[in-house]
Amino acid sequence: MNIEIYKENTLCIVRPTGRIDLVTLEDFEATLLDLMETSSTSLLIDMGRVTFLAGAGLGVLLAIAMRLRRQAGQLGVFGLSGRVQEVFELSGFVSVLDIHPDEVSARGEVR
Image (spheres, rainbow, N blue to C red):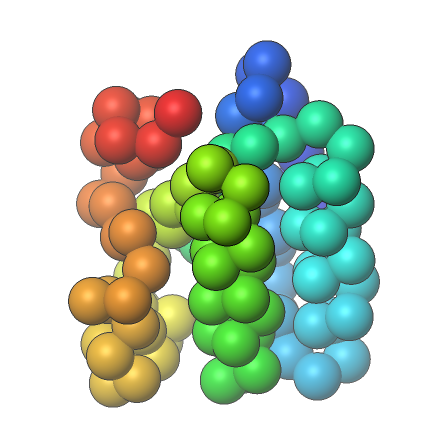
C-alpha cells in the first residue's frame, strides 16, 4: 500500500492506494494518528484507489473519527466503489461515518 498526503492548513487529504489489510493496517493507522497529532484537525480519506478493505480497516476509521470528534475535528470518506463500497454498506458504516460521493462534496462538508 502507498499513501499520498496533501495538507491544506488544518485539513489533510489522505489517498491510500492498494490493499488495506492486516499486513498494511498498522502503517495506515500510524499515518492517520501521526497526521492528527502533528497538524490536522480534519481528515479526508480518498478510497478511490483502495482495492481491498479488511474489516479491521473500518475499525481504524471509526476510532480515528471518534478521536477527531473529541478534538472538534472531522473525518470524511469519499471515492467508495466496488468491493470497498460493498464492505461499507454491508457493515452499516455508511450510516456511521461521513461518506461523500466525491472530493468536492467532501470538502464542502468537512473543514
